Length: 432
Figure 1 (cartoon, rainbow, N blue to C red):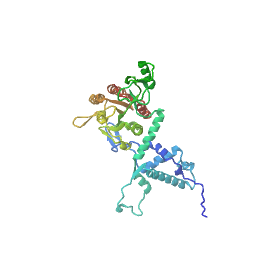
Figure 2 (figure 1 turned 90 degrees about the horizontal axis):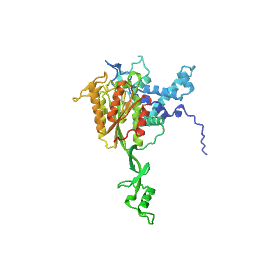
Figure 3 (figure 1 turned 135 degrees about the horizontal axis):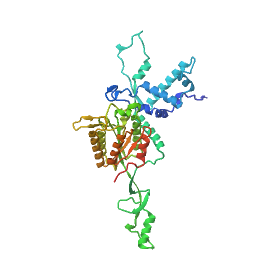
Figure 4 (figure 1 turned 180 degrees about the vertical axis):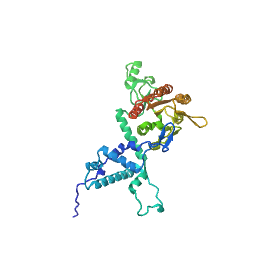
């Protein structure tokens, strides 16, 4: 008779690591904006471009190690080794164990479809190291050369986690279609019933209908109902909404040691996940604006970067308006996230006129012209400002008055909460 002996499973540290929680902790690192164009000197901003995001495998491992430390998922022996407190012959073994753990975590991220990697170019055989010559750590050098990219699965997961965090900060909210001030007939009774009209949902208010029949014909059997006796319940009219998220990619979004663009990207991912899962009738488009404005596919958002750009708000609104007018929705809105004053416009011949010094009247005039065009097209502009300069506040207030929108002066910590409240609590309704 064949006998199978089972022993207690002693899982390794890798089995105890929650990969999704680890990804959540890595969100800021994975979505870091970086700086397009590399290091360069600008007469206004000085040397810029050294804040670029690290997408090397070595940078990923360093971020994983930091996340493991912060989450308390390393053993006490490993932490002691990292802090230099470990003494003895097993120090090298602990370092090797940490390296193997990081390699295994990266492998799992790739196998489960969260990351893909780009291998470094192979060196020609004639360029191989000469025996006896100086050597470098081949593994460390390879890790610095290999770059990783987020997959669509990873972007979707980060959007889901960002949405969950934002909704928990906002509080309980009912998800579904957008509420509006109008009423329509439906199953849910949200207001007093009214006389039935052709085309209404036949959700009869039975007591009111019978009362009308009794008042008209008196108490007799059989009770005769007439067309005018019919009363139907009213429910809130649910509408679809087209949204363009307008993101500022000008240099100031990562200037002065503060990354304002990465939190904005996280909010965009959260909005995308919310609309796709809870508002299937809605649409979300993404437009970035620096010196020029362009639509960016949501799948490319994680790799978006700021650059040595000015703020061409007028062209951003123009592109957003064109996209919204092509959508057949009840409501159209622009959610603009910016931290700077308009400082550029696109001239009729295609050249970009720039003036970063103060609010240039020419730039302001062209920007307000685009705001007025949005107003005439029935597009609401809600502005989320990451700065509180007095002149800028006055300009944003003027934009809101023209476009009948709202202005929120927020920080990177509260940006997502304000946007979610605005989106979920019927702050973007049709103005009549």
